Length: 210
Image 1 (cartoon, rainbow, N blue to C red):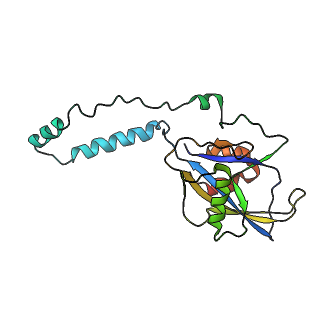
Image 2: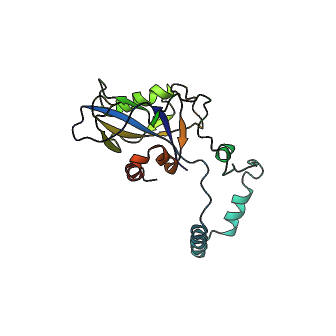
Image 3: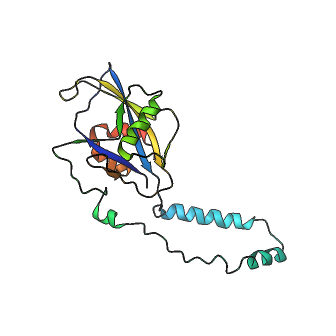
């Protein structure tokens, strides 16, 4: 299942119609390596579709099939062991790799940065993610436009209102990051993410489709 990176941030949230500044925020996503177990209905449909296609598949001459079976025989033997669908982290509800615990009562948020002198808002988002990872060589930003935005109103712990734009970035060609440039962090699924942002749950449900 998809997991997103979130980290703690001291502050409050709200909405306003007169934002004074812009913040670029990054939804950093790890795509699933092991897919969830199929629903029986979905499995039955796929089985039916496969059998239906088999009825009308292209038939090849027997001599051609014999050649394909003998080609490279024994050269590519691989002992394949499937990865478990439920890991130790799932069993213990471990959502991070850090032993550090945030002090006080922080508010969780995505990697983010105030838009300042960057050429584009996406460049600002890249800087925000780099401030956490240090290296963006294993990341991929999906498009140049933000996937959504929200307005934060002025409150006791927020001296001025601002508008937050969300960009999506994905993990590429690696299984683990050495995230040490923030106080604490968690990898969460879409449903788990809503636990950290209950007041904005409806917003994230609409913004994050899957």
